[in-house]
Amino acid sequence: MIVLGIETSCDDTSAAIVRNGHEVLSSIVSSQIDLHAKFGGIVPEIASRKHVELINPVIREALNSAGITFQDLDGVAVTNRPGLLGSLLIGVSAAKAVSAVLQIPMVGVHHLEGHIYANFLTNPDWQFPFICLVVSGGHTDLVLARAHGDYTILGRTRDDAAGEAFDKTARVLGLGYPGGPVIDKLAKTGNPKAVHFPRARLDGTLDFSFSGIKTAVIRYWEDHSQDTSVEDVAASFQAAIIDMLVTTAFQAAGSTGIPRLAIGGGVAANSGLQARMKEEAARRGIDFSCPPPSLCTDNAAMIACAGYHHLVRGEEDGLDLDTIASEPLAPTPD
Ligand code: KG4
Ligand code: ZN
Image (cartoon, rainbow, N blue to C red; front, side):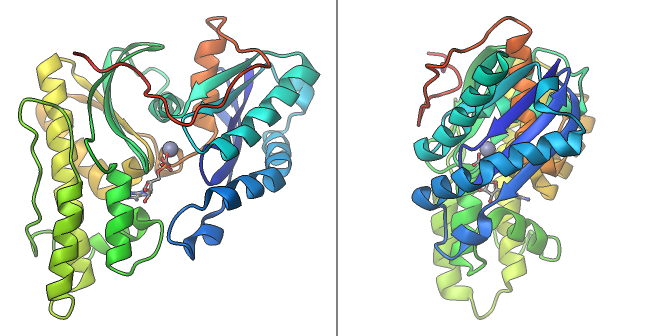
């Protein structure tokens, strides 16, 4: 089954062709970062207008670089929730058009399900049940995935998302937007022990909190921008975030007894986080899966992969498929 994936939930216009849920024939991501960077974040109106311009060329490029035509497609998967409504609408409208004209099934995919499924792209034999730490610009969730489509949220952030903490800290340090990649790079040459930033622990839960560390960096930088290097602050900040994420993720593995951990979402592209997770997993005898950086940040291959698993189960949506700005992936346990 050849699936066209479409992802336009935020500022990337993406289309991908994936065969049988894991063979990525093409994955095109047209980033709008340069347009938004001067505003220090995503401007929704600019994002949706740009998606209108880019969606058709990006889909065509995905088909061309996969060496196929529209007629070869067996299904369409599109992110329809959560995200910026004006942005989601462009991808969903394109998916509906493809589905209606070609008379092939279409399915709406939850963006976070896509981030989880990025793991099946490089690791098709990855087994359920597993725990996935989903860390992106808008979400930080610890998800228990029992089977395809069967998820429970074990923990989540109570305030900022991990990616938001990277982006806000980078802004304070004058590093521009988005913050994650630049902090990741600077941290490589900084001393992670130079400054001790607080590690929030929400005892008795698997929840996260990142607003304290953001405030701590702001205070520290107000007093020390002259005597501490930005590399040291970046490395110390990143080390604290990684500590919090890694500690809680392995706590979830321990408390559920599930020996399989995966990560996904833009922050999962972080080289320090990937290295620490691998190291801890090896030490504790836990299987670990992590997509390559290009499949951690937003892309349509992950949506095609998640969509494939819906479509093979006969789950499809009609032309009345809605876009939804905010919807959790799954319930939280009481
Ligand atoms: O998943 P994603 O591409 O979009 C959302 O769904 O939000 O995640 C974007 C987030 C941004 O906050 C960005 O700063 C962060 O992922 N990010 C990183 C890295 N690359 C992207 N954070 C830390 N290290 C990175 N290498
Ligand atoms: Zn994302």
